Structure formats: C-alpha cells, structure tokens
Length: 134
Length: 284
Ligand SMILES: [Cu+2]
Image (cartoon, rainbow over all chains, first blue to last red):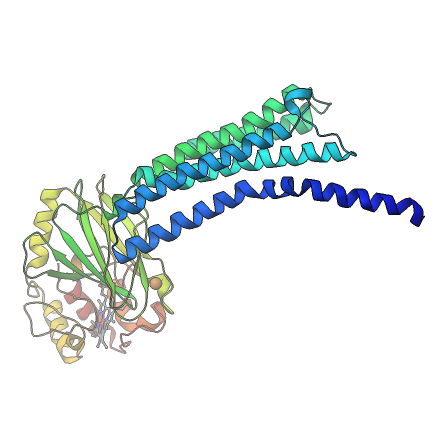
C-alpha cells in the first residue's frame, strides 16, 4: 500500500507547485475588484466628509477604474487561453488528469474575471453619473 | 416598475415550469448554453445596468436646493413641530402635525429633533430622512400631484412611535398661499356659547401651559400649537380625526390612545369635555 502511495504524493506535490500560479490567478480578478471597491467607497466618503477636492479624487478614481478594468481584462485573457474551450469546443471540463485541472482553473478564473469586470463597471458608474458630493 | 417585475416573475417561473414539467428530457448542449448565458448572465446584466443608471440619475434629486419655501420640522415624542419659512420671511408660521406643500415646486424640508432620533417619511413623495437632536438634515421634495398623502415616523422613538404620523397635503400654489396666510393669522374667537365655555375651561385647566393658541394668553410651547387645530386633517399626529367626539376622547383618554404621552389625561364631566371639544373644533 505505502509503496503504491509514495509516488502519488510526489506527483501531487509537483502538480501543486506547478499550479500555484493558476491558483493565484483565480483570486486575482476578485481581488482587483475588492481593492477598487474599497478605494472608491472609502475615498469618496472621506473626501465628501472633509470637504476635500472631489473633482481631483473623482478623476483619480476614474483612472483607477480604467486600470482595474485593464488588469481584470488581462487576467481574463490569460485565463481564457489557459482554458482549452477554444480548441476543443467543449464547455464541460473533463476530470482526472493534471492537464484537465489546469484547464479547469483557467475556466474558473475566466468566469471570475467576467463577474469582477461587471462589478468594477457598476461601482464606477456613480463616478461617471453623479460626479459630486450632493 | 411593477410591470417589469411581473414580466420577470412570469419569465422565470414560466421557464422553471417549462423545464421541470414540460421538457424534462436531456438538452442539446448549445441550446442549454444559450439559455444559461443569455438568461443567466446577459439579461440580468442589461436589466441591472439600466436600473442602476436610472437610479443614479435620480439619486441626487432629494438634495437639490428648493424653489424658495422652507419647511422646518422638529420631531417630538410623539408629534411634529412645524415651521413654514416662505422666501424672505424673518419669522416663521408655526403649526404642528401636518405638512402642506405647493404642487410643482421643490420645497426644502429642514429636519431636526428634540430628544431622540426620529425619521421623516412621506412614502408617496420621497425617501426617508432621519431627524437628529442638535443637528439639521435636509430633504427636498417635489410633489407632482395634489392630494393628501400619509407621512410616518420611520425610526423607533419610544412607546408611541407607531402613532407618530401626519397628513401631507399637496395643494395648488394659489390655494397654498391662501392657506398659509390663514394659518399665519391669530385664532378666531369662539363663536358659540359652548365654545366660549370651552375657552374658559382651556384657561382654567391649564392647557395653555403647554399649548399656544395665538392671539390669546395661552403661549405654552411644550405641546403642539393649537391655533388652527380645527382645520387639521388628523388629531394627535394621525391618531384620530378632528371631530367633537374624537376631541373629547383625546382629552379624556390621552394615555390610552398614546402610551407614555407627555400630555396629562383629564378627568372632566361630559359637558365640560364637549365644551372644550367645541372650542378646539372651532379653531379653524
Ligand atoms: Cu418614531
């Protein structure tokens, strides 16, 4: 039994080491969304309460929104490439092999970057439409 | 808004019914994908974005400056002290427990409170706004249709919080100006014998220590101004109607009608009650 297990564990560890970047990637888009969210809400609240220059803050946050969207777009693009749907045309992830798991992580990161993109757009809309402290 | 909600409800439940009862077999992959992506992602994103854009476009409205008239409302336990400040006025018109607004004009409502937090809310005209002791908040309202709407305290403020309501009367601007002029005037003297007896009782029972009736020696400020109480739509901040019967019920059962009310309940003879009620009802 132990003889059978020993090589399996090595393989798992090796795969985990290889997939660390992918695991990190699936959290990246939601993290950008969260940081953008906190920056927008926090800065606008403090600026309006203290009477700082809201126009400057608004401009800065719009730039940050643009940067966040680009960042998420980039994560989404690499995740899309990692997911093999374009080659296979198969939306269902096969299971069992390390390669399949690699594709699945791409799939998950891709979907998460879509929802993060929408989140950032929604959070940015008040910056575009309201613009002041009123 | 309701129409949209009904359509969505029918769509979602219709799809649920169709997929769970009518078409139960296995699905073609592409077909299923289109339903999931179209109905699960694209449609909600489009609808929510449209609603968000619309909501954000009207969000600043209640903080827009008004067209001139300012109504200052102070939340008391459990009634509303109301002051009208027309443009350029240096003294307000004082009243209570009713808000009147000219239709088609944006009126600033400045809100504060006596002891505890209350919240000013006329659901038909706008959102709620909290009233804090020692602080002034503002909400501006633009009523579009004349009529009488219900207002209500929307922040728990003690035993009789649920009985702290008021009528919001939206009037044509000319009617409003006429009404405000009559509200600014002193009280009319009693016109019947019963009312004259009631006025004497009002003085001898000490009601004037808490209530003002302008143009008389009663100048109390603890309770609502009663100068024109007979022309209000409700009695006791939405608790009763302004009729002879309800007025005598109010004076003789105050603590039953409003638990912990800051007005004493009076144990008077029936004829005394009806005299007092006749006096108050005549304060048009
Ligand atoms: Cu209340």
